[in-house]
Image (cartoon, rainbow, N blue to C red; front, side, top):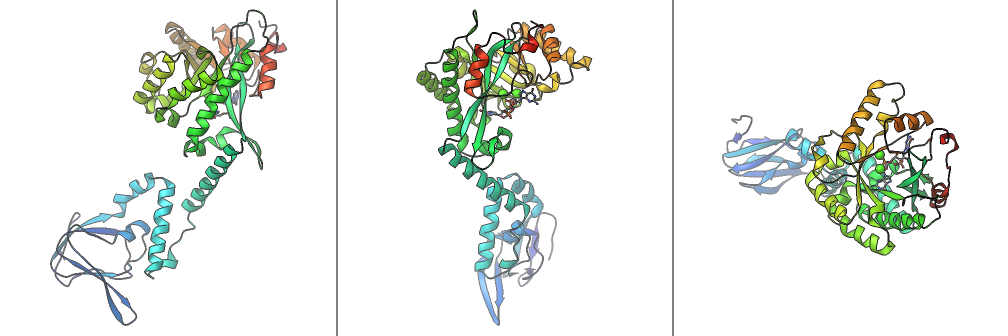
Length: 400
Ligand code: C2E
Ligand code: CA
Ligand code: CA
C-alpha cells in the first residue's frame, strides 16, 4: 500500500483497517471501491460497498472508538485521509449542544449496530455542562413566563449638585429557589438562547414605563428630567429589531425619547461595528441617547467615536478604583475627559465607591458618577425616593 500525507492507495484485496483497530481518521474515496464487512458470529456480513465520493471511518473521527468493521479494497482504490486534527477545531468551535447531540446520535447508532455501543462514554464534561445549561435556559424561560424578572435602578449622580440625574436599569431575577439573582449568573445563558429577544424587548418596555413614572414624581426645584440607561445586548443589536421595539415602547409609555440612554459596551461595538452602527443610528434617529459602556476595557479603536453621535462615555470601574493612589489613572481620566468634552460628550464614572472618588472626579470635570457610595441598584419605589430628595446623600453635602 502506497501512501503519503494526503493520499492512500490500496491494491485489490488489501485491507484499509480491521474491525477493532484503533480509529483516528476517516477517508474519502477518490476512486475504486471498498467493501465493509463485519463478522457476526460465524457469519461474514457485508455492510456496504462504497465508491468514489463516499466516506468511510467517520465514526471514529468523532468518538475515537475502535473500528466497528473491516474495510477491504475490491479493486485498486485511492483515498484521501481526513484526520481527527482536521476536525478538532471545527468541533470545538461548535455549540456544545450540537456536540452532545452528535455524541448521542453516534451512541445510538453504535448500539443499534451492536458495535461498541456500551463503550461510549457520555459522562464527559461536555454532557454535564450542556445539560446544566439547557436546564438553566428552560428555568429562565419559565421564570420569564412567571414574571420573575424585574428591573432595579442604580442612580447616576450629577457631580455638580450631588442629586440624581438619572438611573441605569439593571435586571434581577427573583428566583423561587435562589432568591434575588444577579445578571452575571443568568444573562450569559439568556444571551445564548432565544429568550434574549423576549426579555430584551421586555426590558425596553419596562425601562420606558419606569422612567416615565419616575419623571412624573415631584423633584427638587430646577431639576432636569431624569434619564434612563438601558443595556443592549449584542444579539438584540444584531436582530435588527431594536429600533422598532424601542419605537413601540416609546409609543406605549409616552416617554420622551431623549430621556432614554442606550448603553452598549465598547467590545460589542468593536466586534460588530457595521451592524451596530446601523442599529444605533436608527435608535438615535428616534431621539434616544447613546452611551458607550465599560469604556476603556475593549480593544478600543477610537475611530468609532466619530462614526456616529455618542452622547456619553461610561468610564470603567478599573480606572476609578485606583485613582486616589495611582497618578496615571487620574491622568488617563483627565485625557479621556478632554477627548469626550472636545467631541461634545459627557462622562459617567462607574464603580465610585468612596466619597473621595466623587470629589476627585468632580475636580477632573467628570459630570456624573455611579457607584455603591451613592447607592446600589434599588427598586422603583426607592429610586423614586432618591430622585425626589433634596439631599439624598448627606456625606456629599460639604463637597457640593
Ligand atoms: P454593567 O452594565 O457594567 O452594569 C454595572 C454593574 O456594576 C452592575 O452590576 C452594578 O451593580 C455594578 N456596580 C455599580 N456600582 C458599583 C460599585 O461601586 N462597585 C462595584 N464593584 N460594582 C458596581 P450588575 O447589576 O450585577 O450587572 C452586571 C452586568 O449585567 C451589567 O454590567 C450588564 O452588562 C449586565 N446587565 C444588567 N442588566 C442588564 C439588562 O437589562 N440587559 C442586558 N443586556 N444586560 C444587563
Ligand atoms: Ca451598563
Ligand atoms: Ca458598565
